[in-house]
Image 1: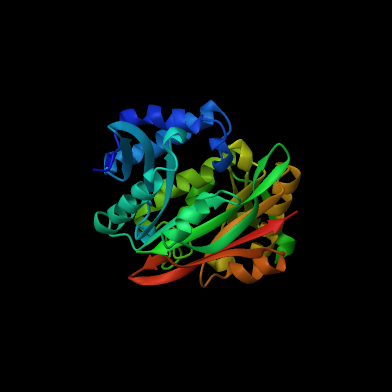
Image 2: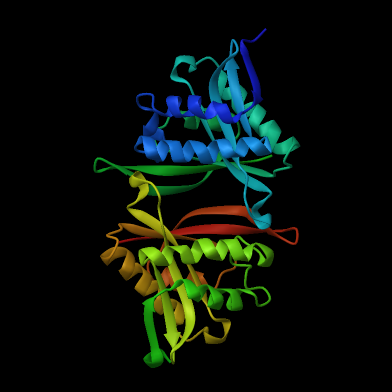
Length: 162
Length: 162
């Protein structure tokens, strides 16, 4: 039996999310800089848990990753949404991201009847390969999106029709 | 007409102008929100007036357009922003939109020291030729991003670099 299980996220998972975002190197792939921004973003992220739009992966019963659907607040956009995912560095390379995203895609399609799922990822992020493998295709690229210590990174925009 | 045209910083009361223009049939088609969702969306929009990030155009002393820079909340992305623009339907095709876009670009560059400004439009949009004239370049096109009465419309993202 796989040691990875998935459940709906709970408000208490916010603490894990903050700790994973604080792991070395992780913030390179997020627009966040300091603890205040991280806590703010984590609060918005976990707020989706009350709609059951947020999934937590467990490895041998311990939280090891979170994926979240940012459900759109407007009716005209309600058929599609953006998502985000983060995996504890201790559990990378074990299939956690793949399992989380597979379940998130099913959740998007079956529970929320979404037609399009899209994401934003910064150039050079190796996660692009996982997204391609899962059938996401690039529809845009915004250069110089991130600026950190005078260095820029572009943003790749990808989507998948469900 | 532009001889009688003037621009000032927006004030919270300008929300009433936005409400009256966008309440007309079809006027919310260019925005993510619909008529029923407009109230809270416009409150968020005009909220940027407190940062002096919003401009109101006047014709013969009467407001005829509101354009607003949606400043980014995180440091790593604070070097760019998006904007919204609404023009009184009775004052279109007179150069108001062009003047508002030019002034918003100037505000972004001189007051906020931004490096670029981007905008999201839904196809078809009367803003597209104005943006192209101001050297905005398309960096993403997402089919069926918006759905109005079951009909999908593309969103186009454009950016102007200073």
